[in-house]
Amino acid sequence: MLIACKQDKIISKAVSYKKQEIQKSKDQSVSSLSNKDFSLQIVTRFSTDTLNVIDYKEDRYSSPIITFQKLLFYNKNLLVKEHKLPLKNINKRTISGKILSATETPIYKMCLFNNSDQHFYIVHGSDYCSGSHCPEFIGIYSMKGDAIYEGFSNEKKTFLLKKVVIKNRIDLNKLSNCVNVDIYK
Image (cartoon, rainbow, N blue to C red):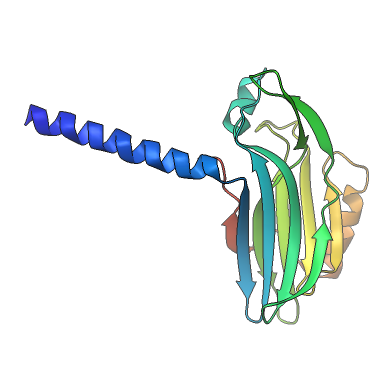
């Protein structure tokens, strides 16, 4: 019995190692969300390096490092719009001393909101931390890729978000089919 357990641990380590190799060999991830004939893809490019973290809140996000994201909107599998997000890049130091240009507020979630006559994509992201002072990004888009709203929580235009939500009857607490852009494994 003891030998079998040791053997299981060895096999488990080998499988885990192979999985890490596969993940580290990639530098791009594509996440998709569909609604009938329409779909949204978030293309995420990243470095498998590790940030030199100062704050314990950043540790979860220290590797991989997101370097670029864009949105692709499709109708019946045809690309109708490519959208460059208004995300800034900032220089971050890695543990090896290298400086990388990283996305300051990466997108990590996309959802659908459907009301009786309109459908919207909602994308959300936040800074490389998990505290209450982290700037957050929210984007609201039509199915065809038109930006209805894009903004950051630390900007003065948050009152505009309230107007957009009321005008379009969007309830941000009733989102559906959410997909995480989960590269932090």
